[in-house]
Image (cartoon, rainbow, N blue to C red; front, side, top):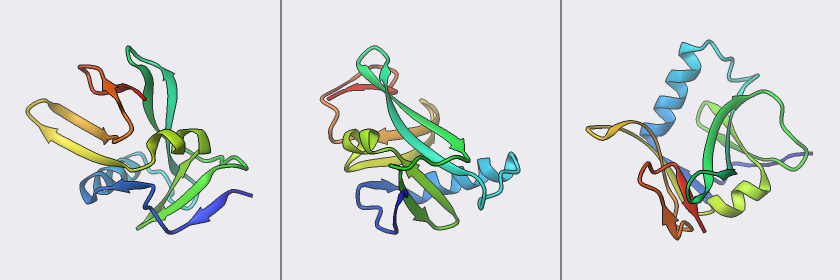
Length: 118
């Protein structure tokens, strides 16, 4: 059974990021009762790890489920280890538009900002 919590102290998601996630779900007609945002980390990129964001509708037994405002956010335990303390934000500035991970565990990041090392 997935672990369910309302405490999002492990990862902070800014209002701007939450708003953008909701907007994307609405634009793609994703039912918030059926789909959730999966946040993760996988091997790759020029620094060793890359962040992943995807909408999913199948949770795994060891997932951590976070209820945030109007939808669920799911994180697998391995990713949570690397993301603990991270702030997920959304930027719409001169350097581009997209989600930004501000990860205190990252010891090195690449120039594109989507790859990191710990």
